[in-house]
Image (cartoon, rainbow, N blue to C red; front, top):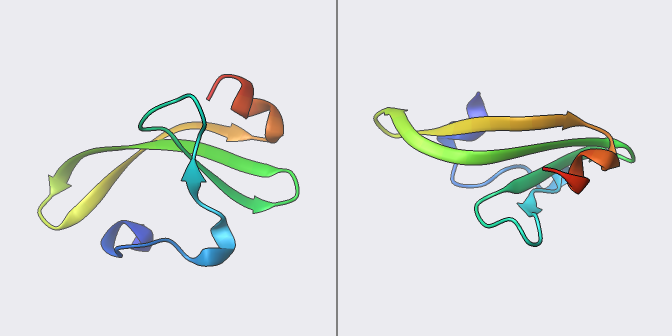
Length: 64
C-alpha cells in the first residue's frame, strides 16, 4: 500500500485518532465509509505496517 511509504495519508481520506482508544485510528472515504487501523512494527525496513481492525459504516466506531 503506497500510503505505508509516505509520511502522511491523502487529506481526502480523513485520517484521525479514535477518541478513547489510544493507538487506534479512523480512515473515512465517504459519508458512510469507515475503517479503523493501528500501526504495527515494520515488517520491511522503511515501510510502515498497517494492521486493519474493522471496515464498514459509522457503527464500527462503537467498538473500533
